[in-house]
Length: 439
Image 1 (cartoon, one colour):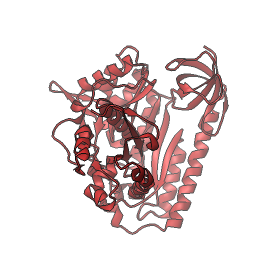
Image 2 (cartoon, rainbow, N blue to C red; image 1 turned 30 degrees about the vertical axis):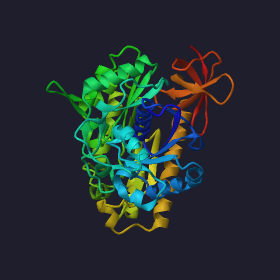
Image 3 (cartoon, rainbow, N blue to C red; image 1 turned 120 degrees about the vertical axis):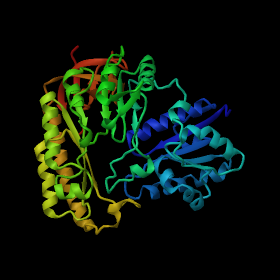
Image 4 (cartoon, rainbow, N blue to C red; image 1 turned 120 degrees about the horizontal axis):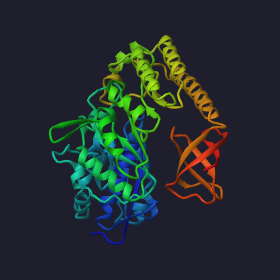
């Protein structure tokens, strides 16, 4: 046990890393480590890394370098690198910097306490195996989180092998958790005050959990979760168009707890580029899914991902992406300039001129920003239900999310965390809404 010690976890990247960081913190708490918000106050620093973005590994090494003065002052400070960079770089991290005491991949962090004991004994262990056992079986069952909203991983890994993506190599093949264990974890979260759960997966709508020989789809899982008393809201992310099944679309019409918001990455509006990306769908397929979602839930808010400057992208390909964005009308979206990821097929292809790619990125972002502002402006004067998550910046104010995942701040001195309040939207701000409580 490490009674009296403190751990600081820095999280990079996606919501799944946020979930993993929480579970690592809980595993450490069971060993006597208390959480702290600063590296300066910690006995253990964990960098839970992401390998999706350009120069992700270099950012990690830069952050490790900033820990050098702390390590010099306190040689007993332990530094761990976890997550997808850990999986991709492995022992190279230890070879490159003597500051790091251990490396653990995203499928092995349940073994973190044992790795720490080995580090304390003078080893510098690396664990990037894909274990046969289910890591979730070895993590603390009683989740400590009591915030109104929480993430819950239900599916990991990816079998799609998009030519730009490292996930199949760092997270492994698609695998789904058993539904009974997910339901049990969700019930425990609700008992601790959670009102909203976001189901997570690299391709979450590819979820296929086995229960007594029966195969559960994501839609069936959502319907079962909606039966949990006290769980008011359910979301899921991130989805793949090829896995957007009709029963999941129907759930948006039939399950009140399933929020009217979908994050459905398309990456490009050009069929030629989509084929080069190995996305396995075309632009028309994607737009047809959007039409079916809107038929099921007319007020649904849509979010997406876009990569511009993919190898071989012409101006016509890029214009097709702009056309698709205009056709959909996104409430929000993420856009990135293509960056080669080592080991992926697209990394070795001829690259688009960086200046041109950057210009295309700015054009996409300007269009998406305009759509986001329009979506927020359309809310003014309307009523909405907001889940209060935390006090706002102003006295007597609460900050939370609408059903459509809009950030909303509400003047409500009597509000409480976890409350779902009926509000009137007063004005739209650049990235949020201002409201007053009406019920």
